[in-house]
Amino acid sequence: MQRHQAFKYELMPNGETQRQLRRFAGSCRFVYNKALALQQASHEAGEKFIGYVAMAKHLTAWRNGTETPWLKDSPVHPLQHALKDLDKAYQNFFAKRADFPRFKRKGSGDSFRYPDPKQIKLDQGNSRLFLPKRGWIRYRNSRDVLGELRNVTVSSKDSKWFVSIQTLRQAQGIAQREVELPTSQATTSTCAERSRSIGIDLGIARFATLSDGTYIEPLNSFKAKAAKLAKYQRRMAHKQKFSKNWKKAKANVQKIHTQIANTRRDFLHKATTTLSQNHAFVFIEDLQVRNMSKSAAGTAENPGKNVAQKSGLNKAILDQGWGEFRRQLDYKMAWKGGMLFAVPPHYTSQECPECHHVSADNRQTQAKFVCVQCHYENNADHVGAINIKERGYRLLACGDAALSRSVKQEPTEVSQLSSV
Image (cartoon, rainbow, N blue to C red; front, side, top):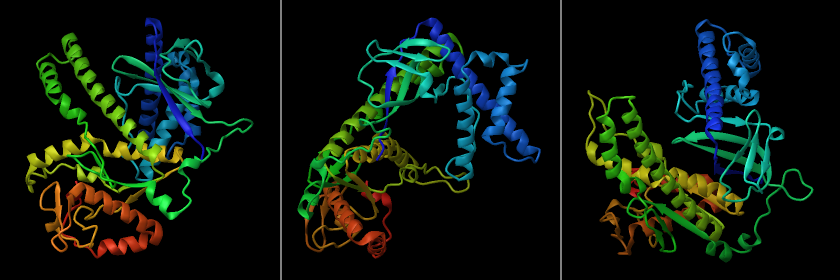
């Protein structure tokens, strides 16, 4: 496989450079919004969708026109890439992968990308980066950039500027390197395969319980900062909106949110790196986190039940970062030469791993599992991890059809949340 990797660093721009970066980001945002407005006007007039090539001609007219001549002060490639982003947003909407494109607003995810690596110079020895129409900018060089530089994305968050350098790994004499599979993770027999594989049950009380009996304690980064965040949000609510004091209070709130996100991301990176380094096969539940964390409020005509309890559960689920955990584990397993498999999550914590009897009565409490048929006892999350691993083997041996039939034969009155 080809290994694309991004290296993110904090930039150290002076005042003039910061102003220039804000202008570049603002110009890209303006082009994106203007192109989106043109697309909507074209649709209302009954005309066809404007493709990227035709829209790029409009960009040339905007840069050479009298109304927006300041667009010439910004590099052209990031402006063109803003149009590509809009075109991709429309394609995702047409394919029903995303909602309809929305207008961008100032201060919300300001960024721009240099897609041409020939225009970018990276001097790692002096910790600086050359960008077109801006020149050399210093950055905090925390680690070496590995591979061939492909593109650079500059972004702003909490009054700080960051650069993300995407690379493609190379071998000597090869333009696009094929990453070799580590021999330490190559499975040579069934016994070796089983010893290097693991099943993972995700939960709230325990973030991840492994089929070997070990588990990872949850971090709960949002819960740890919830009281402090609420205090600063109340201060922000008591300020006159858009005043200087309101902006200061807002900056404090954003800082706390950044701390929560960074702490969670660091925790997930460490957990997924350890798992990918020590196992060749990893089996997890195919959880639909978006559906599991939906609001239970309902509507005015049909109000929901146990709304407060469900709201607390939703916060706890989202605080764990299950979706990001799976995303990181997926690409890290591929980097290390391993494989990640997602199995159906139904009744994994209600099926006895000894006699395979499935019943809601098997799970007497949140943590305790006692089989009503063979009296097997264990932690409910550990039982779920064992069943997930066994389902993974059945998936590999029999395929999706056989596994789907076995799941359909099990009871259907218990929801997916029972495995949490």
